[in-house]
Image (cartoon, rainbow, N blue to C red):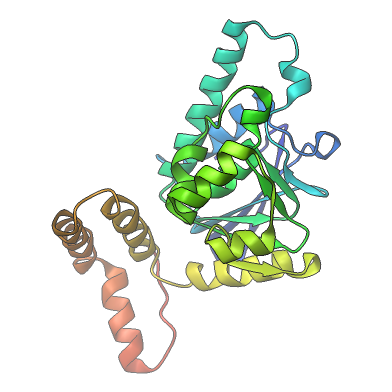
Length: 263
């Protein structure tokens, strides 16, 4: 994992938790080309090197999570330049979706456009009461192009997603929780604490188990029930020969917490 990025702040916490903070507060963490490249590089690297990490938390610096695409940078772009930049964003989105580790969004403020799409691409979302969401692309003569038309309907249902995407209407954290995009809404000063608490609980579990379960859920939802059940068993069987499986059973019988090594 590269040690530094110009638009991201990385903080490695205990238990293999990585806190990734979008760090362009002067631009409400809007997505410019470099931020797209940095997120793409970070998450693509997880496909080949987990670096003993177990959970990733994604949040924003300052008052915003991510205000979407940086329209100041985009102002005056040629069609070719616009398309080249968007290819970076597409690849970034696919890298987040393909991350083998659980990815939790801690949405601290505005998550508009691409910021909402990043949150929707994470495995689940905790949000501050000050968070606001919107997919406003149609108000600019474009449309969501980083998974918004795919991940939002999967989270909140087709009819609600159509209402929000076709209108560009903003919605609150409480509405996002009620509709299924957000798992929990907490006061701003409790957001990171709450997100770290669930990350700690996940990180304490068998890391191979967590990764296999995540994959089985994500892949299974794209299959028929019969095919999903078959995929689940393939994922399950991968765990039988692991040292962590033996350690988990032994620790239970010895009345202690397991010491999972990811092996």
